Length: 494
Image (cartoon, rainbow, N blue to C red; front, side, top):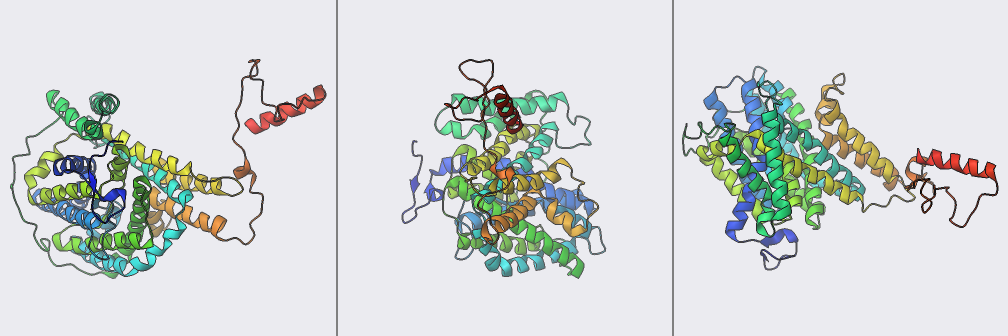
């Protein structure tokens, strides 16, 4: 493969490769376009629930972009003890939205939300050295299951974008929206298939740009809001007042922080697998500390918990650009978007159906990367197949039936309503039960995990007779033995 950059002196990982500045920013812009909607969604939802005005919600959005950019720079470039130094984009976590909406609806409003986030972030910082020790319980059978669920969990997001993004809008699910998503997807696939070299790595960006231009031609893109509002604006400190500290809100937010730390750990391990670089407990700990430091500081500027964004892991996988400096360039763009609201309004003008078409490729590639990791796992003489099966099942539950846990206590909602955290917890626990605890292990696994892969040939093809389950040179002695063998084969095939 042609090299497009050079390694930094004294470093060894693929993530340390430097690209020319122009290419770094072009590839970094892809990351921002991919995750921009996810960053601005929490402030829009929480601000609306708190009854804020449009101007106040605008402050929340700018603060979210500003903090996300700073957190991404910290995570990718790193300082001693902070930052995984991997191509990870940090953004405002959606996992905390439901809890923040509930707290914001109370008497303390947003001030209670910010106070709870600050205390929970400090707790996360304190437990990071212990939390990172669980990395030894994330072998490929666990990480492969988690990465697969991350991709599966993100695909519905792309589908909702393709339908228009707003279920209450009159054009939700219209043929024009889905057609626009299909056009964007077609451009991405066409560029991937026909273009070679640098441009092929920009297939997502090209698909989004061409899709947006096409949307403008057919009247599906609106740029009228770009020129409205301030061009440059510094973030305000405690713009919504000093934080309030309420014990109930703090407890709820601390549970959310544990979920965010679980998801960030999974994302760090996932991007390590994709980049093919070493990820140990120390690196996970540095990444979690960067995550928690950004979360603790976020309320000072008027925004919410930060975490690694799984959708950008897919972009690393599909482009093959593993450099953390590319993501750092994207982080600087996010930082600038927070200071120049006009740039944020321009990016926000990209129609969601366009992002939806590109998202199909992006998020599907995450699941494909997980499947590739699972293909390296040994399934002979163990219960790894059961671990994968159950972890995937728990990961899909909140996607398939979002109200599944509605009758359970609130803490169960917070933990298991995220398919990523549910799959992470189940996969880790089952791996400990089946692989780490040796007592009681039997040499022969269960029937479920022991079932061999079968190849079924068409019986009417004389060159490929039906599989009898016997060696090739073995011939059944009589008709009754042939019948028994056929029945056994049919049971296996079922």
